[in-house]
Amino acid sequence: MAAGYKTAEPLEYHRSFLKENCRPDGRELSEFRITTLNIGSISTADGSALVKLGNTTVICGIKAELTNPTVETPGKGYVVPNVDLPPLCSSRFRPGPPGEQAQAASQFIADVIESSEMIQTEDLCIERGKLCWVLYCDILCLDYDGNLLDACVTSLLAALKNTQLPEVTINAETCAPVVNIDKRRGLKIHKHPVAASFCIFDGSILIVDPSAEEESLSTARLTVVTDEGDRLCAVHKPGGTSLSGEKLQDCVNRATLRQREIQKLIVKVLNSVKPSQ
Image (cartoon, rainbow, N blue to C red):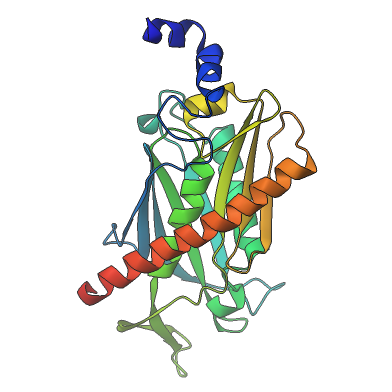
């Protein structure tokens, strides 16, 4: 009976739970799904991390390549993010060029990298005007069940923390780069941005970490990105009903708490894998 009601009237089905301040999956309105993290999952990458947020699973691989800096920014390198939503992660996605959601997610990640200043592109310069690193950050969704952006930001941050770059010098005689793969160093991560996403039901009921079904039934969505200094790095609201100042502040407060949780998780996992590196 309940299954039939959920199929026929999914919104009313969810409302019946929200009235009791809970959700169909048993969570409270302000409760995030269990988050797990695995670092160094891709042996062929310079850094990688797999994040599982409930059923949503994404993996980020960092690949570093040597290139020439641009004339406009001779003392800087590049960071190029890309989010891929293949058909294998959900029936809602189709084969072919990146869809609208994948493109929007890639742009969001690029905006977070720039606004949060997590990576200083000057750190990626090897020799001004001659040689620099470009970091390709490929984020692949393996299983989609809502709240993609939170999982993407966490996997990116963890993968960058895991990244090791080889020592590079330039031969004075040939002017060719010399790569020493036996000497590696980690990236300097200046800030640690973490995303927290929310959905609004019926204009007033706020829930955190929405599932795919909750996203589809909500009247508005919001993602807030903060760093360890409680600085607001980005706010993403793709349409929907407006939010009051009080609701927005509530989201920011919850996002700062989430930042601390995720940063502790990343530190814990990094410390646990150090002996095996």
